[in-house]
Length: 375
Image (cartoon, rainbow, N blue to C red; front, side, top):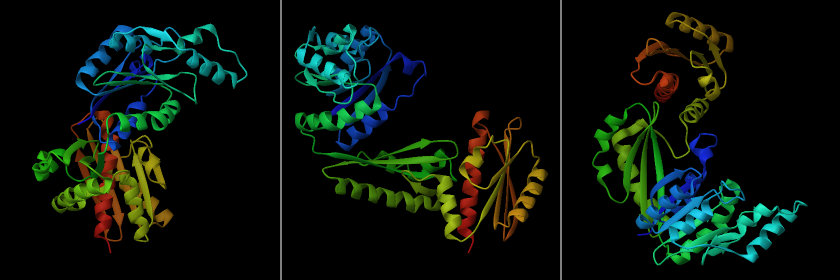
């Protein structure tokens, strides 16, 4: 069973200056190849620490992929770190220097002397051309491992991954399996209650089933490894059917589905119109639901008054209101439909900053279940 680890390199990531999107992208591609990802890690621009992380990963995993640190400056230490981890020296490759000169020449410039650093790679490594950037990549092979160093610039990394690295991995490790993942989105039950209903499914080894709690939403991840995509999908279908049988309408979507989109689609399919009022959410609901009006500091009674007025003025069928009270750790929800008016107060025990999103998701799910009951 082929395994991998990913190491992202860059102090700017550790400082929170940029967001690491490379790990997620690589992880998804490894998954599609049937490779088990053991762990991911981010290391700052320090040669010794990077070398130590690479060495440790080589002891655990077959494939080690690094991103970042291949630029021409002294704080781009990946080449030195990989060489140190592999126990070899760096060597200058004239053909790589020619690639750097050619790439920079396209912009009508001449390379600076320090850019020669990019033509140095670990001794004996496989050079990988970078036709979309100035930093050549490389692969260091051992009897077990492939240590693959890619640029940190996402569009460069993605191009090289597909053009060169995936074909290399398929050939080197004879990858003939796929891993498929499907995520079911749930609302209306907490993580603990969902766990009680599907605990036996979470004990499966293939497919695997896991839970991830978000703010007012719980995801159920089903992952299957098989010899083909159709076989993996069939395995997932079987488990998904069991989950839906036990949870019913608690499951509101799959994969890229979002709660607000499911609600809006339901409103449209029933031929209805929707108006919303929010207070204390900082525009959160307005960014999700069109035709939302924001007010500051509405009491529960004032929320309902505003909701009645907004519905009457707009002539909509349904009106949804949400007001958050941070100091009280509570939220008030109100709804007006053809069946009349309803209110619902909820108390919250989590972090205060998460209360608006939690209240919004609970209100949207309340609207979803109400719509399902309407003719």
